[in-house]
Length: 153
Image 1 (cartoon, rainbow, N blue to C red):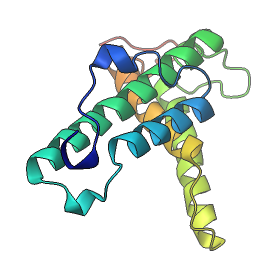
Image 2: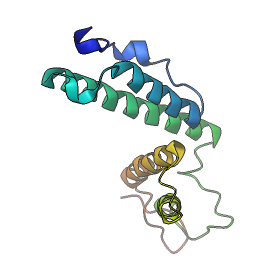
Image 3: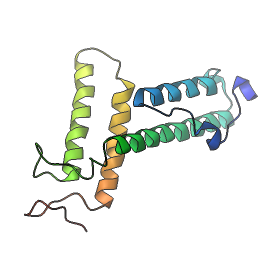
């Protein structure tokens, strides 16, 4: 345990942490970061700082991945195959863009109300929608033709 911080654990050791809801994933990420950084970050050696940061980035990405996979299962691939009842005429990417705008507006509103705290689930959702947008673009779901069918490029 160098500088009071636990040594890096393998990715497999963390694979079972944070399973469940976005709130559980956020809590798991927070608990993990608390365990890893048991001493003040600024008092760590440069090598240890790099190790801790790399480990935390990996963990945060895993938490987002778990959240996206869980929600995609629960919603039945709805982001990529929307039913278009209220949002007809919009491509999957355009619908994701609307959700991203909603999350950004929520963050802006919280700051406007002088509530400095942005909920962790809002940040995880925003990150998730950005990832989903990239996937939808790679699937060619960004533009619809005159028959409201996604053009595949």
